[in-house]
Image (cartoon, rainbow, N blue to C red; front, side, top):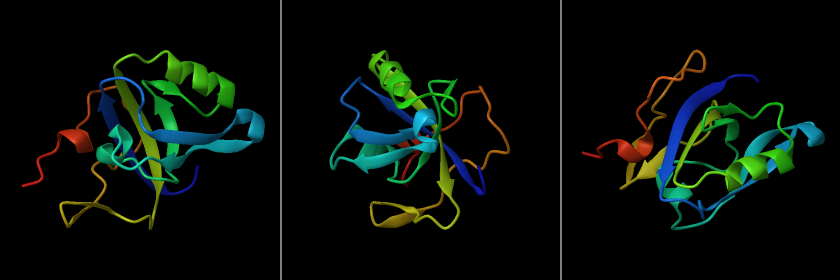
Length: 123
């Protein structure tokens, strides 16, 4: 997968989440965030266009086809947790005019609860 930062993104409240994915096993491309809608749950969560989706609610995505990913996303009713990989050198997030570096630098996947951008105080 190359070099990058691993970040946990959490959203609640159910669909629509406000992002579009592209790629998948059948396309021989990593699953990536293609588009984020303005003023959506995704835009407020810290998810960025170009992020690679490693897992969705604990389900690894590397071997999933795009239709399998859609089926998985449609099964999620309230809480969405995504482990994403952001390329080194990708822009930092800007919230309230301040730059915030990625929150998690993981050496590998963990099933333990992890802090998320949506839950972090800005002060």
